[in-house]
Length: 66
Image 1 (cartoon, rainbow, N blue to C red):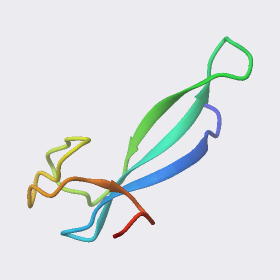
Image 2 (cartoon, rainbow, N blue to C red; image 1 turned 180 degrees about the horizontal axis):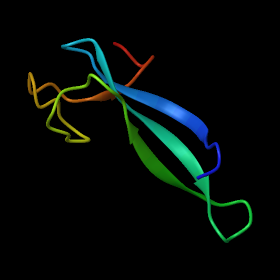
Image 3 (cartoon, helix red, strand yellow; image 1 turned 90 degrees about the vertical axis):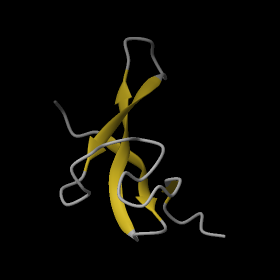
Image 4 (tube, rainbow, N blue to C red; image 1 turned 60 degrees about the vertical axis):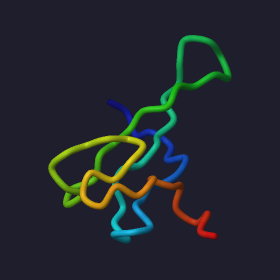
């Protein structure tokens, strides 16, 4: 797999742990891409892309804290 451009990092604001990165993967259609999740080490055993399995907090894009 070629190096893909990182779009954002998703993390748990409750645990303060980065969970995964969202990468852009080019498609056959020029100028279009699809998103691929790259799970990061140390983010817990269970993987759910919307809610933290450890504390139940909704995951957010990093840098969008309220």
